[in-house]
Image (cartoon, helix red, strand yellow):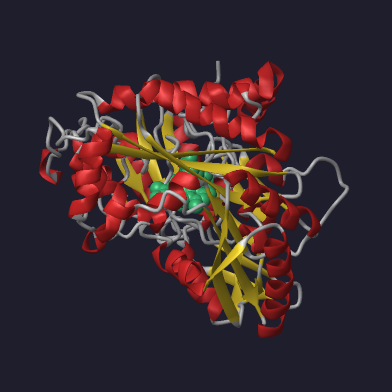
Length: 524
Ligand SMILES: Cc1cc2nc3c(=O)[nH]c(=O)nc-3n(C[C@H](O)[C@H](O)[C@H](O)COP(=O)(O)OP(=O)(O)OC[C@H]3O[C@@H](n4cnc5c(N)ncnc54)[C@H](O)[C@@H]3O)c2cc1C
């Protein structure tokens, strides 16, 4: 993973000349005033942890699994939001952990938490490091230091119960590794977020992730049937049946807790048979409203494709434009729907026929496999483009929310208006990324020219758009989570009593407050 950007540096792409010109002409993008620093120029704070504490940590995991080198510390600094990348490009390593510790078992995690609680050392559970909401930045104040607890060594497929279609896996498995292990048994999780190449199972559960095929396979929190969690107070083992009426479901307290209540050390997950066939295709609707109505019909009356998403007019226009043909942007491109079907050949055939009848009955024009295949081919490549845009002097960031169908048009307008009010004339694109019977999520991509202080520029825009989302009745996050960036808006969403409940849970599980301090909820 590129330390100041996304993914495999070999896959980095140059911006095509027509796009560069478009950014300059349309958005006024100019080269950034401060060029990005090199790896060696990142400024790191001195290691604050006393040698005696480091020795205790090494006794648990072995000296080779406690890393203090710059390389490890820089690679565990923050996550991958645009502000995170902008800070790294400026050489700001001030949030680096003092040490990166790699436990090899649940028992070791328990021991590490005990030592850290004893010495008041903050602990940041670290999966793939792809958080985009500040979920990997611990408050340092009042702590002897900060440890990044990297779960990469917990990477086993522990068991497969083919009869129940339940597997037990460790949290440090990255999604591609997990899919590979399951493929050997003819199984799949079906969880394909855009961060698929790097994110881990523990991170998916801790941040309630949702994948691009979640219409068919469900969100990640739907897949979790059981969890083992290490806390400073001991072990929690949750989930012993597919459904239960035995009181409130405590799994739900851990799902979405973003490392603030405990460290997930194993997951029991519902799996599906790997599909024999996958078909993705495109449909065009005249407007976002007409496309939304069609998606709602499929979500409410079925059949629901495995993948279902709708781009608004702007996203469709930009997405359809071929870089070489930007002069002739199709303003009447309408709105693109991607519908994908996965399963046996028979299931795919039947689903596709029935869904197609609904889509064409509601005004959709079938575009064939071309747009579907090109979406599937490029589904993990957009984050690479962000790095090129940042280097060019454009800020590009994404944000997301969800609401009930009846609130969705208001929510869509509120977000766009807020971004325009804060950023002048940004390019704002949106798609409906996930659908439910009762509502849907809206996923926005914003591109704007950087000012002299792009961090302050985005911070102001983000504050006002968070406010706009809450005022318009949306949730502050459908799948990115809370972290530090959404903490205040989340508190508004759940109210004072809701915050007190979370604090109560944290006080009980983590009395010293060492777990991810400042993430999800503050303790005062
Ligand atoms: C380019 C890009 C695209 C993305 N696309 C999507 C998308 O399509 N869908 C989506 O849902 N999200 C997406 N995300 C957000 C992110 O990938 C998800 O939040 C993901 O779930 C994080 O997984 P991770 O392993 O990287 O976790 P990390 O970023 O390492 O951690 C996330 C949070 O969970 C905590 N945590 C991690 N592991 C554990 C554990 N074992 N126990 C307890 N706490 C833990 C961390 O402390 C942190 O607070 C995207 C991010 C990027 C950068």
